[in-house]
Image 1 (cartoon, helix red, strand yellow):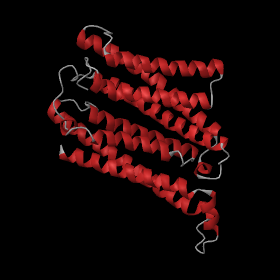
Image 2 (spheres, rainbow, N blue to C red):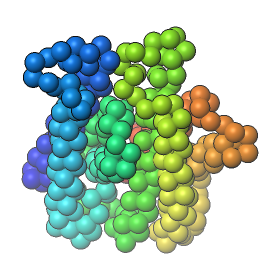
Image 3 (cartoon, rainbow, N blue to C red):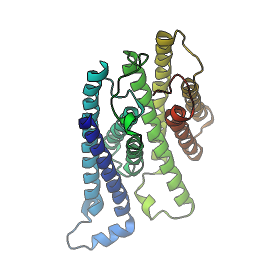
Image 4 (cartoon, rainbow, N blue to C red):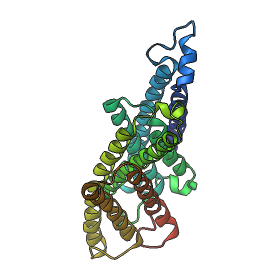
Length: 302
């Protein structure tokens, strides 16, 4: 148990370091600082100067943190196999949070490789760090690989839970991008475009990336709900019981379905889409975290 917990702790600190580096990158990209660096005898203003170097280190630390997170999940999978005969490393709330963090960071790394926009890391990597930090705040009994209850000790846990959690990670990325959009939009409305927000991508790019993240998460959540219904029928003899977790998963799916419908048919983009993305992510947080601790039901053990 200690081996995986040690690696999870390392992941937490590496993600914190990555977040601070991305914040440092955003601050270093300020036009005023870049102009000051241009006169520096070391020539650090070339190719982005200090900001470029900080951004490179931030990416390296992020990837290294993700590798450690992967090793932690693999180690926990081995420990799970020892105590339960099931190797899914997302079998309790702590492990699920760690997996969501892993998926968020993976999504961000792929996004950075594709679009070369590092400023987004200050928001998306930040959410991954918060997810890992929230997991670390759970009581110790939630952090260990205890034997699973019979209903969870099933092959369904491999596909239903992993697919659903991956959809949450996509929605988390969209929420972070929505917040980024609102901050930049507010700064532009106030005419303050030369500060920190100058390092942000343009509003159209942020909006489009947020939409793409939701378009990844929406079908994954639908698939996860269907798989969950099949598992429920196998475990409890019925496809749907209006359990709080089932109900809130459906609510979240409908929320994002309404967003996609409004965007495709009524041109919902920009400000409204960003607010909706943030709101949707808050509903995901409640479904993922709040339901487990505030509402009793068949999923209470998660």
